[in-house]
Length: 334
Image (cartoon, rainbow, N blue to C red; front, side, top):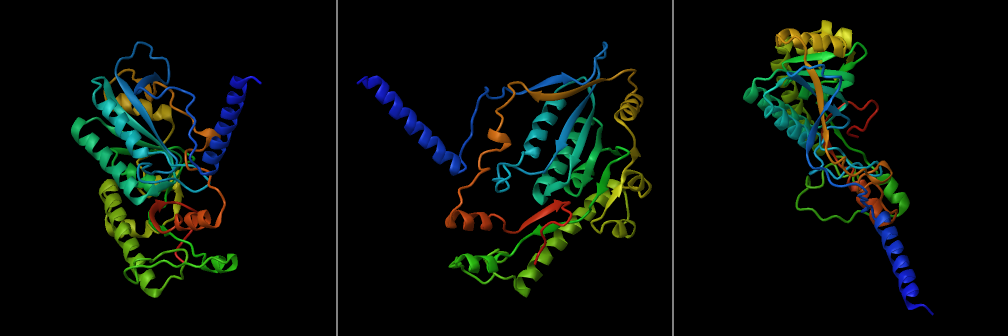
């Protein structure tokens, strides 16, 4: 018997089994490419000798902070939009040839805190650099995405954009009936009656609802103040518009929720005019190393093993979370 072949075979089987267990536990991350080495500039159109530039920065998808969020169960993780934009704005602030920044936003919003941090970071960039910032909505600029756009000097929308959804929700579901059917009993011990409020494993009490409604009111008031300041609107004018609905671009323009409706070419000509530049170079930033693509399109934690313990953990992860997020037919307090 060839001992080296036996060892190799056994090692291979052990590695295969270990990888299988990690995969089922949701801990797999496969890095087939080198780690990124920072941001590099990429032209969006031939420079044609232009030196002064406008940087286009994408803000797409769910607005969250991956450092604090483990991702949506079974659907993969969340992109850390705040950290990504911080890096890009830092790079733009160090470039003496940057004459403007365009935030290309296509997002339904995200968490309350991440949306507010994004807003704050854009405001700081404007204050420190005096570089004009334009928010430009693509398909969608709703809720937390609209909130963040209020930090820009101007807000533009594509002719087919959907804009608005000024409001807040706390996503929460109740599965206590399901747990009884599956034979699972919640035996949580808490220090007070409201320590477990919002748990999907227990029925919501009137006291729970009153506390959550207070939170929603507070976050909603903050949203209104941000829009009033950004759009220079009075509370009386904004109030009827801020019931959570979304608006087509043309109506949003007539209501004063955006400044202009147009295409990228219209925006570029506008920026060339206000910056008094004959021709601007259009650039964006990308990772120099390409990063590491998540396995099967999912980030670590995207797959969970199905067991009673894992099921309870999954359900608890669906607990209440304040969101500036447009979710038609989404979860609400029950």
